[in-house]
Image (cartoon, rainbow, N blue to C red; front, side, top):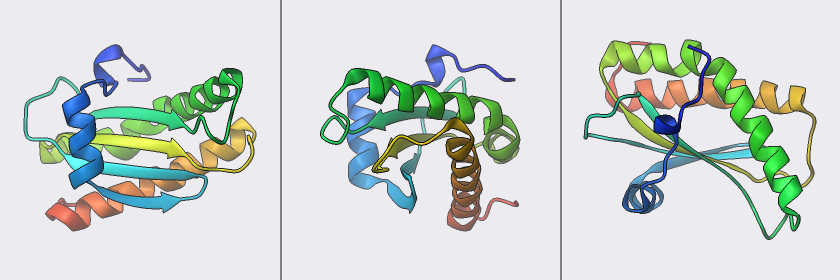
Length: 133
């Protein structure tokens, strides 16, 4: 339930290109989320990609810290906010969350914003495909 396995990570280049060219996106500062319904069967309802800009954060240590905090907050809240909705509707999505903030913020701020992002995503998913929310 509170795991984040390799199968949940988005690694397929063609799928990533498709996500950024055809997917829907929205801003929830300090994050930018892009998502797309995926028709092929997957073992998990969501495949996700986390990113932090190399242009804004020159040191890999900083990018890794941001991505680690994002992954942890997502891992703790994905089941109740996202998985339950998608499993009930029998849908799968691919998702990208990019960090666009100007400075590195504490984990509790990232967690609060991640919750807001997941709620906004569930609203968009229910509106896009008439999924009962």
